[in-house]
Length: 613
Image (tube, rainbow, N blue to C red; front, top):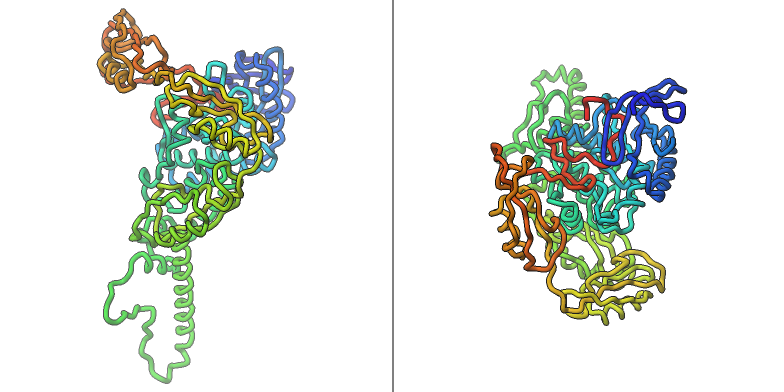
């Protein structure tokens, strides 16, 4: 398509990037005589009218965003069956490439980048635009160190129209999904904040917090598993930085930052302290002492003098012996001493105050496993917390589908987290149920579910299905718990008949040896008596499986036999270990391994120069 002219104005010069959803060209705007990036949608996405409409609308909205940390959208157009976006051409690298090259970023560099991206999101959110696909692949870093967020239009168009395809294929960046995106629930600006927290974690550690064999398993980790601690991977970080990541990636939206500017404020606090007192103030190491009184104060804090019966005088307090006749000449020296002493006192007080706020001096304090306060009143929780040496403060009052009025619905940090003595725990308190908020009905008896649903103002439409779960148990609901629906609307429930056989997921046998396959099948509760066929296959090493009768991830009855085919090809050196790359026909499901080129998402970054992909 090179050298083609679009809209009689944009000349395609050369291809500079390619992804699952679009191809990116370096182009030249003949009218304004400047180079641009032109992103052209792949043909398969131009057949979906709903997607195209969302794409056009959201791209036009993104074009109205003018911010130094947002890749500028200049034009959105169509020529024949070609849909394209004309964007600012960025000379630099994609953040995912930088992470791959460096492994781990210095925390000051990570804060500098994440703050710029947060600033871009702040503007978008104030214009009621949610990005929905914040990830390193959509963040470009210019040669001068400026971070730019790209792909607002495509991200939201994908989420709105094709987040789940007809074959239940997950599209999007599952490694950066918020739990509500993974569930297909309501998405708002706090979903972007969650993804931003994941990106910050990856910059600091060099890897994503949740990874798995397939998109579904990764999504479940986002929903169910606690966020891993950054300090288990990296040492010497400001304690407050880990708190920012935990708050940004809370499982429940109500527990996260309400607005991204709150996160920016916390990041600014760390940046300010780092600039004033340096990194040593965080890691507890000695600092080099020059002529600065503030630096001396910090050193005195981190290196307490040995205790003696009598405090030692330092040289700064000694004054030379002088004749009484020379008393007048000693005045300025005393004044200098008082000034220095005053500065020292103020500096020490300031450092102690900041240190207490950021938890610098709590290293010897024992950690406490945080209990669950859900279902308790605020007063009951405060009594329990005080007994553990913790503090509790109400964050906000919220409507709850499962807690009575006055009862705690959620907490931050979450139950099971390890916290220090004296830590402040924020809780949300229930305002009671409200018509329109869908309650949790799954795992209840159908009669109980009907009673609860009606008390919330909903009608129940049950459907009995064959299932191994106990008879009359609700096994699924639509809408999901916490969703908002009109009072009087219907909730579809699937109810178990208790007669079905237990269903299990088929493991992925591709690239495994027959021995490994039998072990995996047995662990999954499947029969190991399936038909095994050996065939000549050049593309697969000897004794490795290249085909299975039921696709990985599909559910079958427990005890089902799975057939598979094994290669009789020549075995290359190092094969047969079970470590292999999956070729899954799902966009953006490969983990962004820092050491490989995998992890390219369906939305390729615009403006990347040749040789820097």
